[in-house]
Image (tube, rainbow, N blue to C red):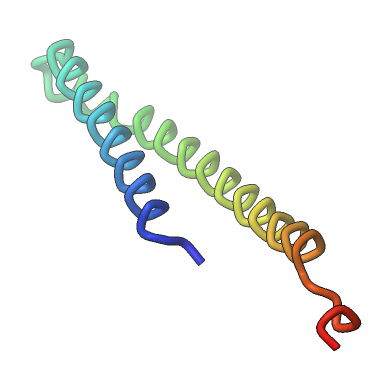
Length: 87
């Protein structure tokens, strides 16, 4: 259902996200403590943030799938040719 342009847009989107993440990582690593215990204390917070982001992404993906299904129904209702017209 998705053409070449849709795949290209999706690729560009993920490239942008990846760049933003890498940029954020480059900035945040400058502020890391040198102490191992302090570094270990950061891990649970980051794990919680990552889990929250995963929940948000899953919720967004579910919404996108629902909207795609609704769009398919609406497009079919709008553009389907009646059998009476074909005969």
